[in-house]
Image (cartoon, rainbow, N blue to C red):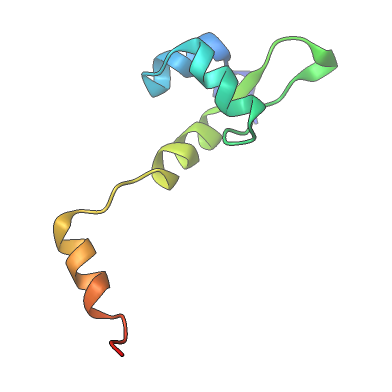
Length: 74
C-alpha cells in the first residue's frame, strides 16, 4: 500500500461525503478500518473506504422482493 492510497480522517470524510467527526466515530466503534501509527493521526486506505461503501449498500425493492420469495413459509 503506497502513501497515495492513504487518506487522513479529513480526506476520508471528503471521500465518503461524511463529517470528519462521524468518520472518527465510525473508526472508534470499529465500523471503519484505519491505521494509527505511533498513536498519531488516523489514516484510511482507499480500498478500506471502498469496502465500507460496498458493505453499506441498500437493496432495491426488486432485490428485497426476490429475497423474500426465497424464504420458506410455514
